Amino acid sequence: MARYVFVTWDGGGNRMPTITIARALVERGHDVRVLGHDSQAGAYRAAGLPFTAFASAPGFVLDPRPAGLFRLFTDTGLADDTVALLAAFPADVVVVDCTLFAVMDVLDRMDQRIVVLEHTLHDFLASGARVAGSVLWTRGIRVQAPRRRAAPILVASVPGFGLPFPAQDALSAAPGAVVYTGAMTRAVAAQPAAPTVVLSLSTFRFAELVATWQRLLDAVDGLDVRVIATLGPAVTAGEMRVPLGIEVHEWMPHDELFPEASLVVGHGGHGTTLAALAHGVPVLTLPLEPTSDQPRIGRAVARAGVGATMSRRTDPATIRRAIRRTLADGPTRVRAQRLGDAIRAFDGPGRAADVLELSAAAAR
Image (tube, rainbow, N blue to C red; front, side, top):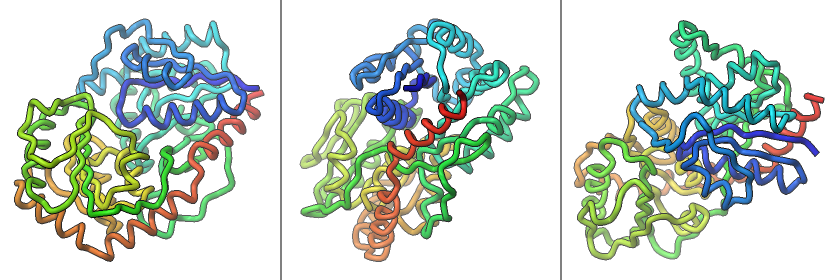
């Protein structure tokens, strides 16, 4: 049995990979702890995972603006909280969210074995880390050194959305190795009984979230297809004009929704996009935050020919035409189905657990 600590933060896209991988380790008999923001406690404890909240960040509320994210990612208080937990619960491996630069730096200086958990496109994060490194050195926080020594970098994704995928090396826990695990959602090939469009935007209240929702709802008004909208915790149906005939849910699991979907319209969040593609469903993205990974994910979808991307400020009539065009596009649908087959060939949770077991063995 090995001992693992996952250090995370309250972000929408990192919850599913962290919970899924941690549970896979628990099911194999390992001892796992999760350290994160107090706002996450309910979700992790409901998943059966022992959870400790950051003592230095009570009442956490995410500020999704670049300045707010920068403060979060460089918060040395979170690093101090991590060190305190490890004093009480020494771990063979600490799995650190890829954006918590201050935590990674402190653990690397302690010679604690770390695995960096990435939950979006690796190329986006690698380029972002290079930029961040040139800024953070003035604060005494190193970025590149911990990433180079991370054993390994675990990417809860696939190596791009284009086929064929590059050949994958054997699983490795070597320092600096980059290991793609695949999707973290249970996926099957979608088989909708009738044309079905799923609308799913961000769980965070970005500045233009409500306005984008309204344009999207206006775009599907009267479409002769089934439309399902999952709002998430950031908005309520009462804030918008919801056309008749649209099925509105506060939340539904992807593995219940996407097997029935013909098209998923989202904001370019990695988790939702990868889950849709894992089911072989084309994607239309309207990125909400231009400084995030969302625009790049949208471009990757369009470049692979498995969907399209457009501005969040696109008028409803143009969005409506894009939805109709994508629904009628046979080649796009076929490419998405083939990509889904390739994504499902990865055993995401099992592959991640295998690598973390290798990492723990190497640490002893």
